[in-house]
Amino acid sequence: MSELRVPQAVLFDLDGTLADSAPDLVAALATLCVEIRHSAPDPVAVSRVVSAGGRAILRCGLPEFAEARIEQLLPRYLDLYAERGNVSTALYAGIESILGDLDAQGIVWGVVTNKVGWLAAPMMDHLGLGARCGALVAGDTLPKRKPDPDPVLHACALLKVDPEKTLFVGDDLRDIEAGRAAGAVTVAAAWGYLNGGDPYAWGADRVAASVAALRPCLRLD
Image (cartoon, rainbow, N blue to C red; front, side):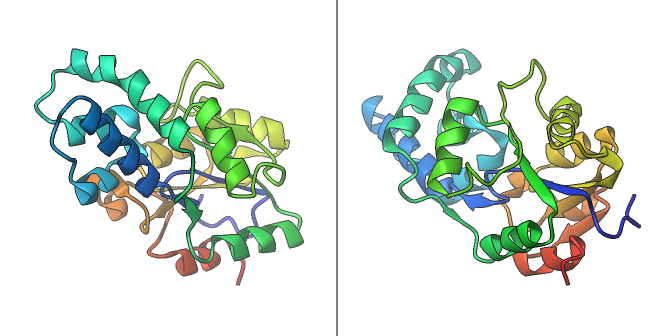
């Protein structure tokens, strides 16, 4: 897989790969903590688990809470996040240039995220990517989510590309597992949130230590 030269398509995870959304997600958790009269969360610790989703964020910020209470609070947390919007969310420096080069070279690209569609689509629009993205596969698009390969395969079908000629870039082990199972070439985004993991141990075909290092991984240099 790692010998693929110029890809037909590039798929990206969203949070922690294309964009830094942690400030808004942490702020929503802080608001929730005020509502339930809980101490403020550790923003650094919470930021590290953003790619693992809302439940992981709540578990990190409310470690003493039982799983049933986490499930009970999850809808309210997501509502607070949606109400806040993406005011502090931004593309990582250098991502816009990479996407522009993909567009210029006619390489289609899309997003495969476990974030639910009603949160992912507004975020994409806020980032100016909604109209440019060739395929957005969200966490509720299909019955299965990453690390299952179905979302990656579905994105490839929407883009009309061969999975084996597609690169999938993500900052969580689930991204690499999903991409590998789909037959795509995988790139671990080591600049992301990582969820406490070591991207060099995930079995990715390539590891990009920074956004700048992603360019040669995508064969854009």
